[in-house]
Length: 181
Image (cartoon, rainbow, N blue to C red; front, top):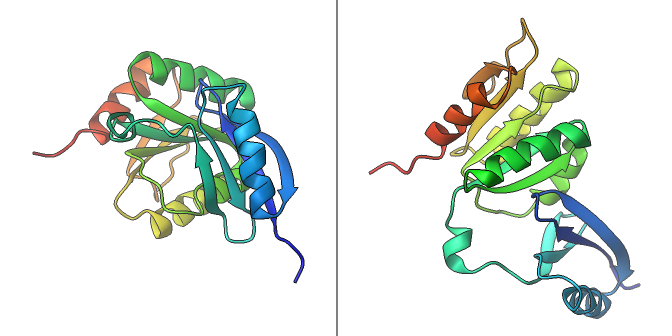
């Protein structure tokens, strides 16, 4: 059986993911991660694409950071994803941002903890509905906030807001990430 291929990712400070390459074999994945860790303090990980399983990680944040309020954002343009991630990061959230549904499914393929999912507004309605349905099936206890164009609503989401700036949606993120007593 030939060695398996793994994709290598780095979590950037703004929460977005940067693919740093692909390697063949688990040992090569670990070597690539250790080499990457020499040049960055950011979290880095390797996934096995067919199952989307995280198979190796380096620079993993301390437990207290992992327990913080974590937001996973599916954006459909890089500029908007980065801008929203910066707004949330300044408010103390740990944000992971991906561009598009396919990348989101790859990253979320293995069970991870998130407090809320944000689905951006810049994709066709059917694309956004498909993402919301997939998220609900994989993470039924995590709330979904849909950022919507005018006159649109994502009924599969827990929260809907017309995208008019952070003052409209940041309070909903705060509410969705509250820890019940």
